[in-house]
Length: 352
Ligand code: FNR
View 1: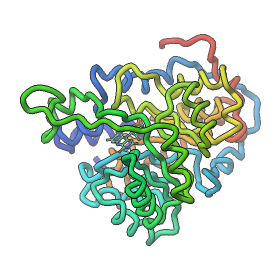
View 2 (view 1 turned 180 degrees about the horizontal axis):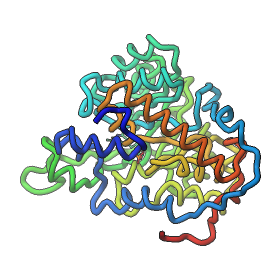
View 3 (view 1 turned 90 degrees about the vertical axis):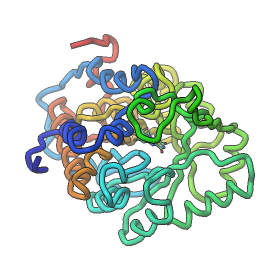
């Protein structure tokens, strides 16, 4: 369909499901095992009802969207989260996400496992004046290798590293194994060897001395690990269950943010906290920001928007910005950086 006929973010998935082959669509959409976490990430947002405050002047709301992330200026408090293999949706692959993000002035964090290499993405990025951070998996416990990886990330022009810490082993993805060409089951005669990652907080502290870039742990899922990350010098933390793709029945980041708000609210003041998983509507962003989350990551919707190339990426950004502004306004928020947690009823999870 014509891009102008799309009315909301879910429409991009509707289109992608129809135009991509089942293998590519499954790669983007699937989660681990029974996909409870994947669905819960989406469903959790409707369990916490809004408490709209009325008779509030919210006329300047759009002008409050610009947000600094690790000191860099962007036009919105949300960003494109790392997702591998953008080439399944469009031949220009990650280049469209770099250019779409640059034209919209939002942050894009490319995956280490892109269709394009980190250096190729860096070349596209250097033609823009946009700030980019790079996602990376933990390097092996080999100092030369670690230094080389961080240097590659610096050379590609990135200003920060999002280090994914939620993937100690491959995800157990049944749907991908069923439908994704080239993906084999974890067991049986055709099994691919599972890769396991060794990473400790000690290695994390050492790696911080190997690069001048801030290293942000991505994939924090408990209050305990949020505290440990801060104690180990994390400049920011990123709540994520990898979109439900790593281990099933892991909590949605909204639930983890609620726990931090209840048990260790000081963390939101000590470091910038990012969160992703299941964000599809403006009100989803409002709820995360209300708890003290600084910026919100979004992955699948942008991968699906890339079916339309750069125009799709830009349209998805516009939709999120517009919905964020009108939903914030309708609950009586005058400034998206000053959202009272009271605009959500956290006490009584509900099901509509
Ligand atoms: C991901 N994600 C991911 N994360 C990461 O740190 N490195 C990676 O290479 C990838 N690759 C990847 C591929 C695909 C196709 C998806 C959908 C996701 C996880 C991603 O960064 C993010 O945490 C979640 O996907 C956020 O949930 P939503 O927005 O997709 O619901």
